[in-house]
Image (cartoon, rainbow, N blue to C red):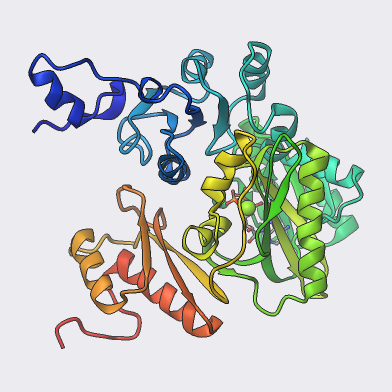
Length: 424
Ligand SMILES: Nc1ncnc2c1ncn2[C@@H]1O[C@H](COP(=O)(O)OP(=O)(O)OP(=O)(O)O)[C@@H](O)[C@H]1O
Ligand SMILES: [Mg+2]
């Protein structure tokens, strides 16, 4: 049997039929015209996992993917190949779709405004999405709503960072206003000299910047919610996120030892914000818990988010299903956790990809940990690249966390952190 890419919407099964005088391949729409089509811009792992949820709901996600080998394009049958910055590609992906949504926030806002004017149901709408796209617009909006954020300033010239630090002290954090992800576009200069070097380089490349206080962190939290156009909102328990090199590595759900008051405050803040901004779909509110116990908002993501992956196995309704329900204005699902603790550990590419195949690594992991739930994204291994995640459920935070991290490290490095030898 020949393997076909999904580029033209033809599956291998369809190809077999085509060998004879069988019917032409059908689009998912023709299979059951009553089922909605959701378009997701971006062919990454978030779209891949949203497609998984779409299947259970009798749908088939359409993705706009940069290439046929992207994680979602590998598994969806309804794929439009093109760039998220190309208006024509966006239009092609939107034809006949009931909701048009995102696995990243990098689509130019002006393109989205055009799609809306042409009648596309963009979810979240551009006037909400802008606060996840533009870190300066987000800070101004949150300030206006009276919500807590770290002190910040816009940077338009070299002296702005030093002036800011004169008022607020060093160290500071410099951020690109648009386009950052996984810590790219975030700089933590050691001193004034380094700060000025970064600002000079970025401004020369026309990258608009903000500067803010480097917060003394106790830890980072994420409050995830979803909101439907009908106005229904649902919150998952607030989680703790652990970052390594500016990138999410581990998520503990719910956040250990978080007081009920703070947890309720964070959930309510996220639900309120989703309502005030008119968010449609899932939204993660990334939070800082300061060493003095204050909660500050770091940034917003209006899509499924790494801090919600635990819920694929650890919550009654995953963020991927909830996102689909929300953008289609279905009633939202129950967000209750299924265990006292769920820990998600990202499988981050090792500095040198192991010689042992991933297939063999999965085999050994399952032999050792039958309860570990593995999610792999079909991505090549590169240092620190997110190639999958592992969820482990249980009762004791320390035990569950150690197990999830050990499993994820094994999958990326083919190395047991407790020294266990597969041959002994
Ligand atoms: N003001 C700050 N003070 C202390 N640490 C910070 C600050 N801003 C960012 N960080 C650290 O850097 C990480 C990445 O920053 P941020 O979330 O703003 O960037 P991003 O690249 O857009 O993130 P994402 O990976 O969520 O897309 C944060 O999770 C946090 O660990
Ligand atoms: Mg972030």
